[in-house]
Image (cartoon, rainbow, N blue to C red):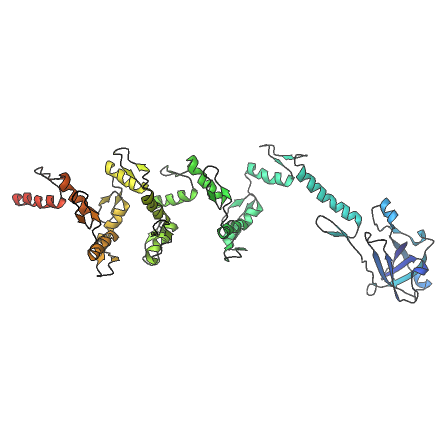
Amino acid sequence: MSFGLSVTSDGNEALQVLEVLIKEEDIDEDDEYGHITCQDDEEKPSVELLYKMETDFTESQSSNHEIQTVVVNVKNEEDEQQDEDVDFPLGSASEYPHGTQQKIHGQNDHLNLRLQGRMHHCTVCRKSFTALKELKKHQKTHSLSMNEQQNPGKEPHKCTQCGKEFTYISALKTHMLIHTGEKPHKCDHCGKGFSHISNFKSHMRIHTGEKPHTCAQCGKAFSQMSNLNTHMNTHTGEKPHKCIRCERAFSHGSTLATHMLTHTGERPLQCAQCGKAFAQIANLSAHMLTHTGEKPYECGQCGRSFSHASNLRSHMRVHTGERPHKCDRCGRAFSQTSNLKSHMLTHTGERPYECLRCCKAFAHISTFKSHMLLHTGEKPHQCDQCGKGFAQIAHLNSHMLTHTGEKRHICDQCGKAFAHSSALKCHILTHTGERPHKCVQCGKAFVLLSQLKTHMLTHTGEKPHTCVQCGKAFSLICSLKRHMLVHAGEAS
């Protein structure tokens, strides 16, 4: 069965004439509108042609126009097996002598031509096509992609410089930018260049402040999807990155890479000024502030400035009293995790840091370093007001309170204020009557550890304090000071 589409035209107007070549018995003569339908089975698409019958078409009108006929071939199942195309060739009505022509006339405003029916759907991506030929052509794109994935070694695109192979030529072109160093995508704000457009787009969000990726659980927003995925591990508690040496697990791959440096001892990042090496770029950046003296992080409550944001956060707990890090053995809480780690050594008794000169061992590296200054006599921490030097930064900080007169540690029982927390702790013992430091030889107890140490000299007979003028030795520094007055009186 076939039907034709006739198109007529002249110099002044466009007149379209639809001629349908079909047997007369297929059309109901009483209907103003008829349907031509081709339906063989459910697997074969059907085509409906809605047309308007025109009865006032005369020979005089047809003689004034040149008629061109577009024939639409609708083939049966046998024809489709021989030729897989459903095509629309140009032809003439005379090619179909056995059909009865019924002319359908219409202008653009009332020509009603509509093709309907089941489409050809791709089973891979569900894309639809009206022609079987187009569907089969489209399916070749899937087979090509699948072949490339299944056979990546087939006709690979190889880099001439490093020999790396790629399935797609586009991937090779992107890879070549590594060798050429070309960065065609340049930021107009800061001038930074990028090899890939995706990296450039991510960078632009730094300037725009755009954070399109939002966490559905806490509402925190991120500029990049990868950062959101990393953040989600904080909610799930997942730690997919595991160290093959110590079995320690991490949420982020970058943290694992940094952790691996503790096993290798590698410190690839070196300070250009002093040569000190670091494992992490963050540590190097923090170290550089010691050379510049910059302290950009300032406390809003007391005005104290810090080189690092982490130090400011730790300092803020002094004002808030927050102690989030708790010992699971004794329940003691600490404001910083480093203090908790140091405290845990009191339970284990471990002293991993040993002095090679006197064989004294220490639980903490900071204590060990401070001890080493006793052997070297070095006092690197100097007061900028009086010039006095100290071996430890903590001693310098305590000394600075003598200049400021600040006494922020207050006894809640009597209101007495102290410059140092240690002095307040000792003072509290006067209220409780507690004497925790007891002599193992005579049983005498003392409030302060320093008092016990002084008392122990009476048992050992040691007299470490010697007069430089007469050579007389004393157990206590106060006894030496009283003795010095004797020489001062002689001089007067």
